Length: 256
Image 1: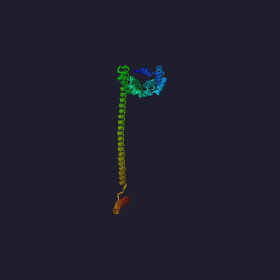
Image 2: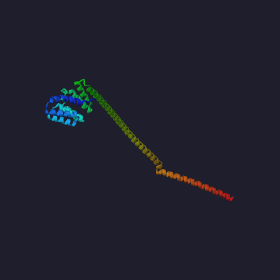
Image 3: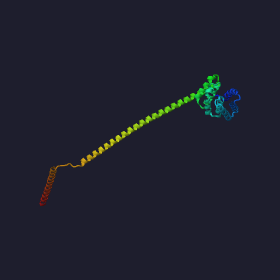
Image 4: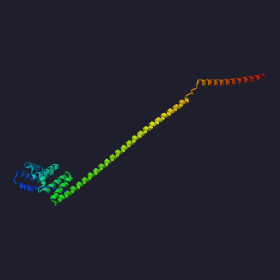
C-alpha cells in the first residue's frame, strides 16, 4: 500500500498559493504549508484553521487541514473534513489526488469498501496512476477477505444456531420421553398397588373363611348333640360290659 499525501499536498498547494496573492487567508495557508513541510503538524493545523475562519469555503485550507489531521493520527476527523469539500474537490483539477487521499483515509479506518470506491474514482480521473492501482488492488483484496470472514462467521453462527435448535429438539424429545416414562411408572405403581391390595384382600378373605364356623340351625344342633350323647352312651355301655366280663373271669379263676 502506497501513501503519498505529502507530495500531493504540496503539489496541490503550489497552484493555490500562486493564485492567492496577498490575500490574508492565503497567507495562513502558505504558513501552514511551511509548518507542514517541517512536520510541525500541530502548528500547521492551527494555520489552516485560521484560514478557514477567514474563508470557510477555502478548498486548499480544508484539503490541507484534512491531510494534517491524518498525519496527526486523527483519522476520523480528517475524514469528516474531507467530506465537507467533497463536491468542490471532485470537480476541481485535484480530483484524482483528492480521491487518492480519501482512499488512504478509508484504509486507515479499515473501511475497505470506501477505499475501493475512492481509488476507483481516482483511477477514473488518472488511469496511469500506478500507486492508485496498487492501493486499489490492496483494498479490494482486504474487502474480499473481510467478506469471506463475514460469510464464514455467518455460516458458523448458522451452524451454531442449527446445533442449538437440534439440541433443543433433542432435549424436548428427551423430556417428553421422561414424562411418558414417569407416567408409565406411575401407572405401573398404581397397578402394582391395586394388585397387592387385591391379593391382601383375597388372603384376608381366605383366612376369614377358614376361621369362620359354619352356622347351623337349633334343630340340627340338637340332633348332633343327641347323636353325640348316644355315641357316648354306647361307648360307656361297651366299657361296662368289658369290665363285667373281666370281673367274672377273675372270679372263676379264684374259685377254681
